[in-house]
Image (cartoon, rainbow, N blue to C red; front, side):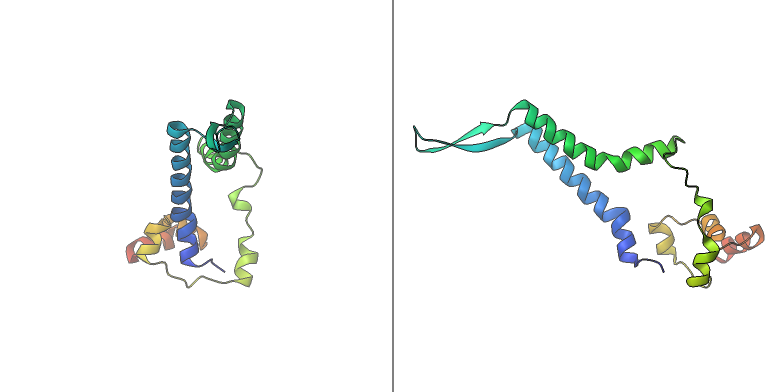
Length: 142
């Protein structure tokens, strides 16, 4: 069963955009304002802003970067042809999944094709159509 369209749209566009904005905002604040904490000074009864030590800033940046940059790193390695796993896309058990969840009659709208970057060639391959049907799919404009 396909996940809802709103969830797929969120995975592809909304969540990466929000994460990028949050990361860049935090990086901007770190660079231009630094990181400070309030320390109580008993000799003068008020709080004093004290900067964190350099090692704490480095650890903060390291932990944040490690958790965020894993996905773009894997994407870059895949684009360069460096595979991190032995899983091949052709190894997916298509026939078993189709036996449980048949979707051969599903027609993708042009909006779905645009938002989810589905080409007619990928669609024909995923449905198991040959080149003859793929050509027909292009001409009928699903």
